Each structure stands twice: as structure tokens, then as C-alpha cells.
Image (cartoon, rainbow, N blue to C red; front, top):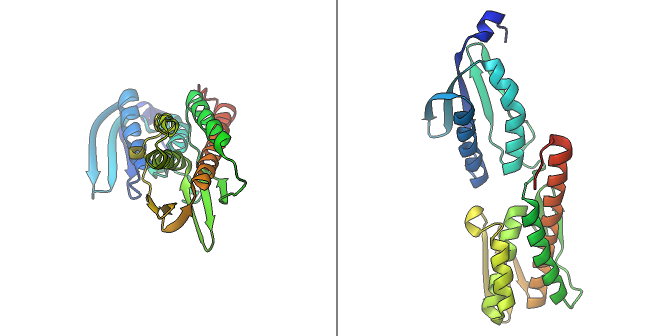
Length: 258
């Protein structure tokens, strides 16, 4: 793009285009945030939804000014929301892609306030005290995901979904055992993330004396002791990720997250 200094000083109508094709909860939250941020910072003269896919925000602003300010903010907030929404800024002289070509399987980061991370740590510590056996369900945390390895089946969920699943399992233990401690721990987990906050393909039930968890088509049959171990693993891997995200936000982005 080329523009002389006189043109740069003039206000023009710039289009901020957001592609909704993924349409996950994370993506839609990011779109809502972006619309609010643009309205707060600039004069948004119109908003349209094109082809039921593209949100277009028409903003009166110098394009150079908008691109300079929005690029780092968009990257940070996409990272914070765990979104992969393509964002393009277009003016009279062309378009600038705000998106990173990093693919759907790239690392994601989720920012959670420190006091909520500490809350999950305390729940995990209480669950860990209840575990007596050494049997483990194989889980691995990587790139904002928790991976499960079950015989011939391998699947993953995101760390916010892992927190929700730990709460669902605590709820099932409360239903089966009737111990108030499980209800209390469940409620504390759901203060951080609730089932409605995520899109989780999971079913939890009981067959004979085992609790079954069907996750993305993979099935686990677990004793109560193994369920406790899974909860411990889910919370441990999530807390590790949230803590790492806070450090990266502060050191790499200069963002203070309390």
C-alpha cells in the first residue's frame, strides 16, 4: 500500500472483516470483544453480516493508525480467548491480514486470573489427598490441550474443557457416593468454568460398578479411585497451562494479569 502524507491524515472508511467460519464459543466471544473494542476506540458507522459468515465493521479512521494499534491487540486477544478467527483490515489501497497462519493444531493459550488458578490448585490438592492407589489414566498436556490415550483411541480436549470435565466428574462422584465434599469441590470448579462456557462432546454415566466417560467417541470405564485420578490429572495439567500463560502474558506481552 502507498499513500501520501495528506491522504494519511484524512479520515477514511476502513472495513474490519471477521470470518466466522469456525463458529466456536471461543471465536464468537472474540468477535463480541472486537466489536466492543472498536466501538470504544473509534467511530463505527455500520456493522453488517455478509453471507451469514463475515462480520464487517465499517470504521471511520485512518487505516495506518488502525493497523498500527489493532495488530498486537488482536493477536493478544485471539490468544487470550483461544480463538482462531481470521481478521482482515481493508481500505482503499488494499487489505492487511491480522491473522497468523498457524493452523488449528498450533499451541493455544488461555488466560485465567491468578486467584482462580489458585482456587483450582486447592481443589486439586484436596482431590490428590483422596487418591490411594497408584493406577493412572494416561494423560498429557500440550499446547493448551489435554490428551487422553486409551488403548487404540486417542483424543484431546482444551484446558478450559478439562476444568469443566473435572467438575462433571466430581458431580458424578457426589451423585454416586453422596459425600458433601464432592459437591463443594464441584461448585468451586464451576466458579472458574461452567459447562455452558465450553463446547464439550462428553457423556458421563454408570454401567454396573463402573463410571463411564465417553469423550469425543473414546470410552473410559473407571472405578471411583480412577475417577479421582482423572480429576487430579485434568486439574494439574490445566493449572500448569494457566500458570504458564500468565508468565508469558507478563513477560512477552507486558500484560499484568492478577
